[in-house]
Each structure stands twice: as C-alpha cells, then as structure tokens.
Image (cartoon, rainbow, N blue to C red; front, side, top):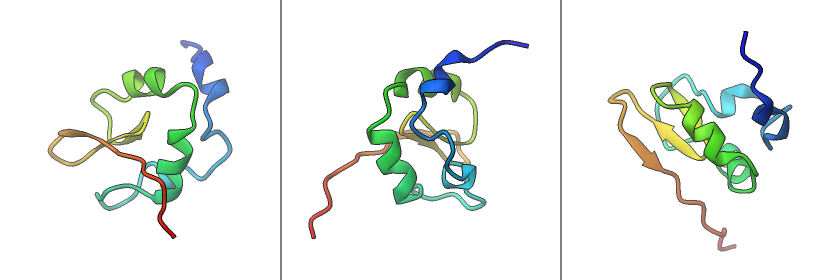
Length: 77
C-alpha cells in the first residue's frame, strides 16, 4: 500500500469528509472551500483527485467529470 505523506499536512484533516464529498452535486460546502483556500498541499491533493468525485485541492468535479476551479473570495459582510 502506498503511503500518502502529503495528507499528513492537509488542512482538511480531522474535518467531516462529507464537506468534500456531498451526496448531491453542487458548488461545494463553503466550509470546505475556506479550508482548501488555506491548505499547503492543494497541488498534491488536486493531482490525487484526477478522475475522482468530490472536491480535491479546491477543485470540484461534477457528474460530467468537468473540473471547475472553486474561486475563494473574501466574504463581504
């Protein structure tokens, strides 16, 4: 079994996985998007997610396998 060392540094470690892998397709959970924005291993995560479902490295995939960059913007409150 391959050891995936980059996951040890992932900002999402310890958070609920359903934030990144929702049951219904959509733009992604805002909490996951915010966590990905500050993650030091987004490149490695994005590469690991090629061909997978869910959000990987701040990128989400939908049912058509089209990949879209999730833009993280500052909240205007």
